[in-house]
Length: 429
Image (cartoon, rainbow, N blue to C red):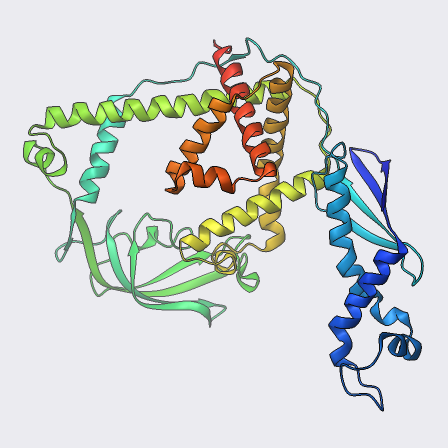
């Protein structure tokens, strides 16, 4: 087997991989075994027709596609793993250039290669000062959030709908006098000001009384997910069945003792301030890291191939889909609710994918420039941390980690060293 590399523009490359004729012959035999039970020839029982007989009757081409599908993944992975200098960072675009019995099998793979980085200034980077102060307004907001969580809902009988009320309504929508699909609901719970309905709908319910019927006129947004409703004027017939409001607990010592371990409101307030300060410090740490790395990226140069961004975007999309699934929501349902499709979803991921790639490349360059290494002790400490996270024994986890995974862990630790280094050397102005 052999590999030839032809460098293209923008860190793309065309890899030509040649597989010896005897290996292709074995793949042809595997393809025959896979398909022999599907082929009928007079005078032979199914599955007993010799490979040579089938090839004579139908031509060896009958097995080419399956043989190619068998041989390409293995040959590609083998060549990439053996040639470490070829750092592929995208999925390959495969094209078969020679597929003929008795001759070598040849295919090409167009791939993105890991780009080099011309590193800019990374020591003593200056960034804008990050706010860490906790204000009284923020403390009040956090306490009111707790009051909301401990509120009770009561039915209102003696006044009309106002902002923040919870209404129970029936509604039916019409466009050009015709009811449209999905525009009807009964006993629907709608919080005024939640933004759950089309813009303008909720505001027009303010002032309505219990059992009142109203006609609400709205216009569907131009980017609405249902094509037939985009930009259309609509009339909703609405009946208000119930009006409810949240009743918040009094802000006093009794409230403080019920929602915390403290006896007085003053003590509770001080504890809220302490926790908000800790949270803000952590947020400030993350913001500083992001700002420093962004400044280094801006001062550095790299030519990132589009295929690399596409691959990262797809990975991020898969991760997002996994998180949705954990919440009991499929990607298809998410598309339905948001009016998005797969292409738009991937396009939305690309800016974040590019930023993630740029950040990693410059931090890898910093780690290389500073010659950061990871000691056995540091590696073992990371294994202990991971074992605790996965609720496993450290020794068992260590045994499970292969060479490739170990290299990845070490690279990630070097990256973190680089991040810590540039942040510690940065200055806020």
